[in-house]
Length: 125
Figure 1 (cartoon, rainbow, N blue to C red):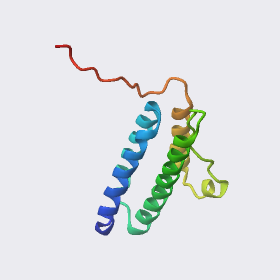
Figure 2: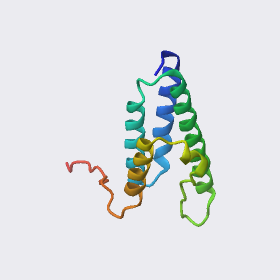
Figure 3: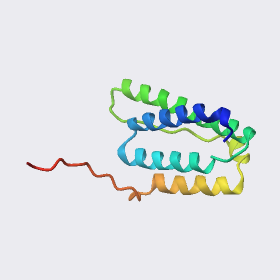
Protein backbone atom coordinates (compact mmCIF):
# COMPACT_ATOMS: atom_id res chain seq x y z
CA UNK A 1 0.00 0.00 0.00
CA UNK A 2 1.16 3.55 -0.54
CA UNK A 3 3.23 5.02 2.30
CA UNK A 4 0.60 7.62 3.19
CA UNK A 5 -1.78 4.83 4.16
CA UNK A 6 0.64 2.94 6.43
CA UNK A 7 -0.35 4.45 9.80
CA UNK A 8 -4.05 4.23 8.90
CA UNK A 9 -3.57 0.59 7.90
CA UNK A 10 -1.78 -0.31 11.13
CA UNK A 11 -4.39 1.39 13.30
CA UNK A 12 -7.25 -0.31 11.45
CA UNK A 13 -5.52 -3.70 11.58
CA UNK A 14 -5.07 -3.44 15.37
CA UNK A 15 -8.64 -2.21 15.80
CA UNK A 16 -10.04 -5.19 13.87
CA UNK A 17 -8.09 -7.71 15.92
CA UNK A 18 -9.27 -6.01 19.12
CA UNK A 19 -12.87 -6.02 17.92
CA UNK A 20 -12.62 -9.74 17.13
CA UNK A 21 -12.17 -10.39 20.85
CA UNK A 22 -15.95 -10.07 21.26
CA UNK A 23 -16.59 -12.91 18.81
CA UNK A 24 -17.05 -16.54 19.85
CA UNK A 25 -13.61 -18.24 19.90
CA UNK A 26 -14.02 -20.14 16.62
CA UNK A 27 -15.24 -17.05 14.75
CA UNK A 28 -12.47 -14.96 16.33
CA UNK A 29 -9.86 -17.38 15.02
CA UNK A 30 -11.45 -17.42 11.57
CA UNK A 31 -11.81 -13.63 11.51
CA UNK A 32 -8.26 -12.99 12.71
CA UNK A 33 -6.82 -15.30 10.06
CA UNK A 34 -8.94 -13.72 7.33
CA UNK A 35 -7.90 -10.19 8.34
CA UNK A 36 -4.23 -11.19 8.41
CA UNK A 37 -4.47 -12.84 5.00
CA UNK A 38 -6.35 -9.95 3.40
CA UNK A 39 -4.04 -7.26 4.76
CA UNK A 40 -1.01 -9.27 3.63
CA UNK A 41 -2.58 -9.83 0.19
CA UNK A 42 -3.18 -6.09 -0.27
CA UNK A 43 0.26 -4.85 0.81
CA UNK A 44 1.29 -3.88 -2.71
CA UNK A 45 -1.93 -2.52 -4.22
CA UNK A 46 -2.17 0.92 -5.78
CA UNK A 47 -3.52 4.01 -4.08
CA UNK A 48 -7.07 3.79 -5.44
CA UNK A 49 -7.50 0.13 -4.50
CA UNK A 50 -5.89 0.77 -1.10
CA UNK A 51 -8.44 3.50 -0.44
CA UNK A 52 -11.36 1.20 -1.30
CA UNK A 53 -9.84 -1.61 0.75
CA UNK A 54 -9.51 0.60 3.82
CA UNK A 55 -13.01 2.03 3.44
CA UNK A 56 -14.59 -1.44 3.32
CA UNK A 57 -12.66 -2.65 6.35
CA UNK A 58 -13.59 0.52 8.25
CA UNK A 59 -17.27 -0.17 7.50
CA UNK A 60 -16.80 -3.74 8.76
CA UNK A 61 -15.16 -2.44 11.95
CA UNK A 62 -18.02 0.01 12.54
CA UNK A 63 -20.65 -2.71 12.04
CA UNK A 64 -18.83 -5.13 14.33
CA UNK A 65 -18.44 -2.45 17.02
CA UNK A 66 -22.17 -1.65 16.80
CA UNK A 67 -23.14 -5.33 16.96
CA UNK A 68 -20.84 -5.91 19.93
CA UNK A 69 -22.54 -3.07 21.81
CA UNK A 70 -26.00 -4.35 20.89
CA UNK A 71 -25.06 -7.85 22.02
CA UNK A 72 -23.80 -6.52 25.36
CA UNK A 73 -27.18 -4.88 25.94
CA UNK A 74 -29.13 -7.94 24.79
CA UNK A 75 -30.62 -9.67 27.81
CA UNK A 76 -31.23 -12.99 26.03
CA UNK A 77 -27.53 -13.79 26.06
CA UNK A 78 -27.58 -14.89 22.41
CA UNK A 79 -24.99 -12.94 20.44
CA UNK A 80 -25.67 -12.09 16.82
CA UNK A 81 -22.95 -11.06 14.37
CA UNK A 82 -22.95 -10.49 10.63
CA UNK A 83 -24.91 -8.66 8.00
CA UNK A 84 -26.45 -9.31 4.62
CA UNK A 85 -24.29 -8.51 1.62
CA UNK A 86 -26.27 -6.34 -0.80
CA UNK A 87 -26.53 -7.77 -4.31
CA UNK A 88 -25.15 -4.57 -5.88
CA UNK A 89 -21.92 -5.01 -3.88
CA UNK A 90 -21.73 -8.66 -4.86
CA UNK A 91 -21.99 -7.66 -8.53
CA UNK A 92 -18.86 -5.50 -8.12
CA UNK A 93 -16.73 -8.44 -6.98
CA UNK A 94 -14.17 -10.09 -9.23
CA UNK A 95 -14.36 -13.86 -9.73
CA UNK A 96 -11.42 -14.33 -7.35
CA UNK A 97 -13.25 -12.37 -4.65
CA UNK A 98 -16.44 -14.41 -5.16
CA UNK A 99 -14.35 -17.57 -4.67
CA UNK A 100 -12.84 -16.18 -1.46
CA UNK A 101 -16.27 -15.20 -0.20
CA UNK A 102 -17.60 -18.71 -0.86
CA UNK A 103 -14.65 -20.27 0.98
CA UNK A 104 -15.19 -17.94 3.92
CA UNK A 105 -18.91 -18.71 4.03
CA UNK A 106 -18.25 -22.47 3.92
CA UNK A 107 -15.69 -22.23 6.70
CA UNK A 108 -17.91 -20.05 8.87
CA UNK A 109 -20.96 -22.28 8.52
CA UNK A 110 -19.53 -25.79 8.69
CA UNK A 111 -20.01 -27.67 11.96
CA UNK A 112 -16.35 -28.67 12.40
CA UNK A 113 -14.32 -25.60 11.57
CA UNK A 114 -10.65 -26.00 10.69
CA UNK A 115 -9.63 -23.84 13.62
CA UNK A 116 -9.42 -25.71 16.86
CA UNK A 117 -9.48 -23.54 19.93
CA UNK A 118 -7.89 -24.80 23.09
CA UNK A 119 -7.53 -23.00 26.34
CA UNK A 120 -3.99 -22.61 27.52
CA UNK A 121 -3.27 -24.29 30.79
CA UNK A 122 -0.74 -23.16 33.29
CA UNK A 123 1.70 -25.91 34.27
CA UNK A 124 1.04 -27.38 37.69
CA UNK A 125 3.73 -26.57 40.20
